[in-house]
Image 1 (cartoon, one colour):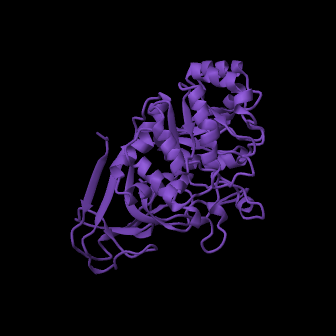
Image 2: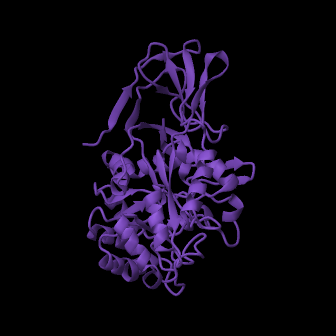
Length: 428
C-alpha cells in the first residue's frame, strides 16, 4: 500500500468584496504580506515570477481562484465552486544528478536540495572524480554550498577509467562515502574523454571487486563509435556490452542510467530484480525527438542520450507506471550556461532540477498513474541501493504556475526545461 495522502478542498460559492479578501499567490515559495494586509508567494528561484493568484474569503472553507497571470475566474460577484487537489508522498531522492563545481555548484545545489532528500552525484568534472579522496573533497564542497538548514545528503560516486584499481574499489567500500562507480564510454557524453576504452580488456578485475563488495556500476549506456547512428547507440551498447557483462558477472549490481528506448526497457525487465535497474529522466517521459526541431532547432531540449521516437517514449512511460521496482527517478539534471547551449557546438544536457518533481507528476498524471508516483520517486531507488527510505514527507499541489524563462546568476544564465511554460503541479 502506498503511503499517499490525497485531499480535495472544496470552496463555497460566495460574493467577494475588497474589504473581505486576502490576495494569496501560491507557488513553491514563501508566503509574504503586502500592503493592505494582502499576501503573496514568490517563486523561490525567480522572485519576479508569480503562480496562479487566488483569494481567500472570510468564512469560506477553501480557496477560490481569481483571474491572474495564468488565468482563472473573474474577481467580483458570484464565484464558481472550484477544487484544489493535493497529495503527499515520502520525500523523493534523485538517483542521477549533475551539480558541477565552483560558482555553478553554489548556485544550483539549492534547487535540488529544496525537493530531494538525497542524490547520487555524477563524477564527470574536470578533472574527473577518480579517487575516494577526490570524492570526499567534492562532497565537502557540496555540503559547504548548501543552505545552513538543509538536510540534503550527497551520495558520491567514482569515475571509472582504464586505470582504476581494485584497491580503490576496496577503499571506496570501506569509506562509506561511495555509493557507485560510473561507467562513461570514452567520448560518449560531457567530460567523458577520460572514460573507459575497453571494458572487458581493462576493467574486469575492478568489476569483479565491485561485485564482491556489492558496489553498483552506473552505466551511461551508449557506444561512442561514430559509425553507429546516434539513435541506435543505446541498443548497440545493450547488445555488445551490457548483455555480455550480465552473462559474465550476473551478481554485479548495475544501473542503466537515463534509459531512452524500448530496447532498454526490455533488457532491464529481462534481468533479475535487485541486480539490474534503470533511472528515468523527466525529458524521456515527456518529450520525443520532435521536441528537438519544432519551431526551429531547440538546444535546450538537447541531451545525451538524445530524445527518441514517440514509440520509445510510450514504452518508458508504460514501464515506470507499471509498478515495477526496477525503475526509479534519476533526473540527469545537467546545468549549462545559456551561451554554452546556444552556440555552434552546443553542450548536451537539460536543466530540470527546480521543476523535476512537478514534471514527473505531469507524466504520471497523463498516464493515469499518480498512485504509482511515490514508489517510483521515493521507494524503488533506496530499495535497490540498500538504503533506508526517507521518513520526511513532501506535498504536491495542483495549482498552475509558470516556469521561469531563465535563472539569472552573477556568472550567467541557465535556461530550465519547459522554460516559460505552465505546469499544473508544484511542490508545496
